[in-house]
Image 1 (tube, rainbow, N blue to C red):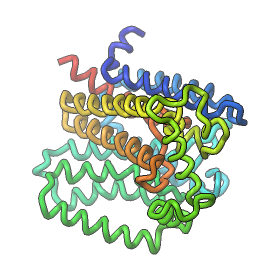
Image 2: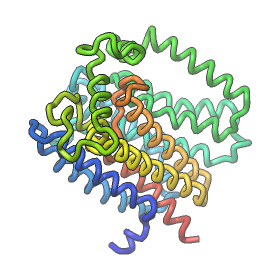
Image 3: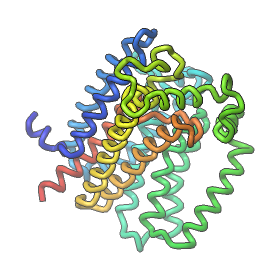
Image 4: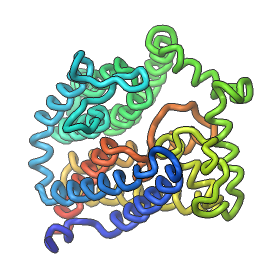
Length: 363
């Protein structure tokens, strides 16, 4: 066991453990006195299982993990397709995103974004950047676009957005030449217009409209963002204290154990607590990038860069959502929000990163 623990980077593991502890305390406070009052115990169990998964994966040689990436990718796509099959996929709240396994719901899209990153990093690392032709890059891009379309079919726009860092990684590896940037902007703009008219559901369009004018319907469509802002503002500089947030404890704050869990933290811990949490996230992202620089292969380095982008996007979108500067996308906050599928997927990604660190340390 000691040998397995040596594979873990203390400079990455330290802030993650603190974030997990902070998240569990926040979930406990948010669920206190509700029908979900025991959800913090369930999340603690998921954290423990995820930690064990990370230790196991960290001891597997990274080259083996990358060599198996095609099989992992195919398995992930099969799971996404299975979600859409009647009788297999489970619908909750009008969306079919889950599979029921042993009495527990599992969301394959949470796992798929990491498997797509793994496969893309492997394909990009197989050749030097100068040898990647446009058609090869297009083929690699389709490896990301295909699962994104399956996720949009569920529908889950927020999760589909989570695949964007993997797409962004491709032109970064190729080199940000002016024509690539211009082409990317044109394609994104064209897809945005197409998505608004043909892809987005009415409720998703309403989220964008509510974001643009949150004060139009404070008791209706703008209720969630309005209550979140009130909770954050009520936290002041030092916060109202553990289990003492009025918006949280009086149940004005919606989905407070998942999407808006950071609002609970901000209300209870205040501005100083927010700075502390964001600082810890910054330490995690910085250390992942440092491990990427230490990596022995391009594939390992690309995976670390993509992982940092993926985690950074989740933090940016979730925090931006709760303060009202971004639309409500339903993206959870890593190591804070309750959820078994997301927790296990994060630790799977961290396990690969820890494996890269351990391999680099053996130089």
